[in-house]
Length: 191
Image 1: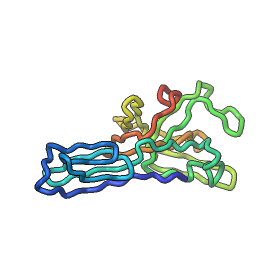
Image 2 (image 1 turned 90 degrees about the horizontal axis):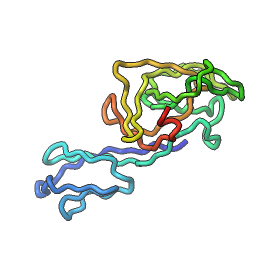
Image 3 (image 1 turned 90 degrees about the vertical axis):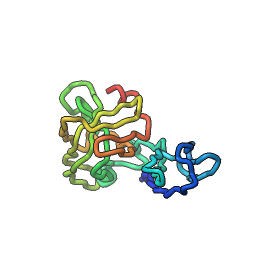
Image 4 (image 1 turned 120 degrees about the vertical axis):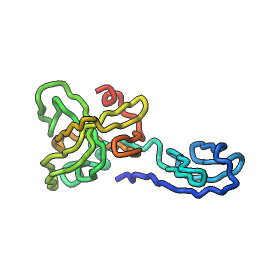
């Protein structure tokens, strides 16, 4: 399984640094001509907490979407993507009509893609199948700005593991908003 990678750091700044002259590039923070931080991973964000504290987060900016259909990583039963989910993950799932083992199931409407912040799971995995429910809150994705937002008022959803399409890489900004760290395929972005 691919590792998620993001780390937050807190810097205590020297009184000599002029906080108004901070600059950031993909993996460096500078103050004037002085290099303060150089990191092997791109810097996702830098926030000046006060005159002496700078918090920054380094993360992979273009992490991969993890697809259930990636047979090199996922499969059926204990190898299903649902077995790797954690509470707090945001996932893509199908509604309308989809296939399970080559058989069309659903309500007969065209396939649509929905997004969910996983809250709980009740799934049984065997060596070759998975049964149960994934439950959570509906989220809205602004694919132009790569933003994820929990819908308000809360919209609770549930679906079966056979509807699960992918897990999305995120960086949570607060309890209700996150940055999407990958580009959604057009079919999902317009669904």
